[in-house]
Image 1 (cartoon, helix red, strand yellow):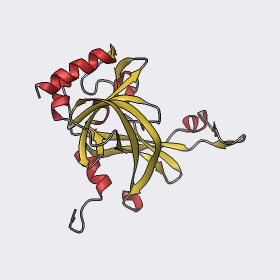
Image 2 (image 1 turned 135 degrees about the vertical axis):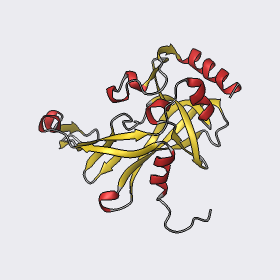
Image 3 (image 1 turned 45 degrees about the vertical axis):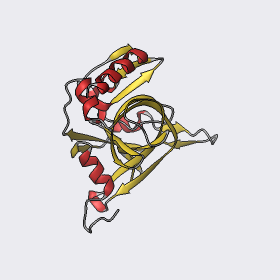
Length: 214
């Protein structure tokens, strides 16, 4: 695909399209936070290394979905699955304007709206390693391998998607029950439509019904 010069880098552009319209503030950890988990065990080594510092960011989001029906309608793909493989992180931009992004592999177990181009797709998220620290958007913490979600997704390139509305489009699945991210992450509390403790089956049926009428 031909792209004219001087466009916003693709990672930053995706963040804007996703609704992450601005990083409002960066907060470095306090000394207590910094040393609260001073050391982290490394699975492949017997010794211990200092845990990286975390940089917390407040971000504005352009989307404010009031219901799962509207969230479903706005999504290109709604799918249940699991984060697999090894995430890939990189910086977009340079100097003080650089932002870290991480791409995750998401293996789809069932599609509730839309037809995925592959069983495993790429998810693009703001955050990741940043000059020796970890950059995290407070209300949209980085996903982790083995996490299970129902995700409301917008496509931006073949087999590449971002979660629509950040925390709003990311539903955590644990022990067969679904939970809005805000029920587990205080900074995301109250963002978007809420669900907590509903069975995955019942939630999938409801979303599939919304999809039929969207």
